[in-house]
Length: 351
Ligand SMILES: [Fe+2]
Image 1 (cartoon, rainbow, N blue to C red):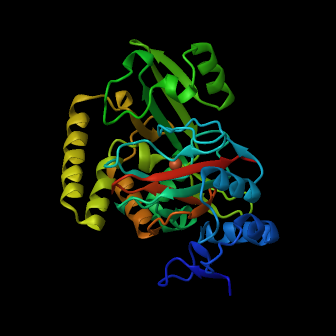
Image 2: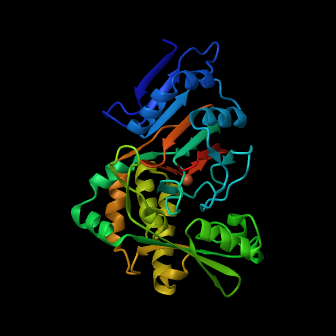
Image 3: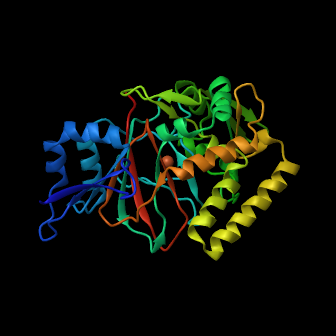
């Protein structure tokens, strides 16, 4: 058979589905394959959360964008997330320009916006020398896996995300905890345009002294999947909470067992401890609290991280791979890595 399908993990009965073209001599057209199987692929994507296409004729960012559009014709290029990204083609961006040591915890893309994307696509143009996986996690399993106390607390209280951004004058300043300046995020230095974009996207904003911008989002902690009605963990607590980075890095160190990972784990824990003593939580680069402003206990975040890591799935990128993700059920992240790495992303609108 020229195309085989298998689960990514042999130990599981569900999860990421790999769709692999096996005829290496003459690469198969991914566009043709998608075109002929579009409805089936749509259903498989919802069932499995993510599909990994491997071994097809995808060699450029434009090939990737074309294949993504074949899967979902409504690609978008507005990005109000936190990672610095470079534009590659009209609808394709570098997945993240964050430094290689910097982990990106699991998240459903832009879950804190009024209209998060419904689909997300990644493409491997250049695989890293080591690590640098884009693990995924079915957040339907996270919803089910949380213990009752934690799930009830999030269900009852919802979450509020706080993000603080420097302005254009901070260009060139390095801060481990802040991701982008507001002019980079909104692609303008015009404050009126920033405010308009915030209103459109349901973001509250506050200008602070020193040309800083603080953004707030309030949201429920969970959604019902728009097609299946299943409960889904759908917020960024495990990314933005002040304890999240240290908790994340301790999981990474346990997995990678590298001296560098243990080093960054220790540094992150120390910095978190220091910031807890010296800074107001609302002044941190990012933080998450319950909607009423009360703090989310650290042990809740730790439990959440444990459940997420229990359900994460990993694979090593190969050049030409495309990963299609149902953003309303399945999260993604990034592991620290070595060597150059070129992973591109594009996404499709919310309905
Ligand atoms: Fe992302």
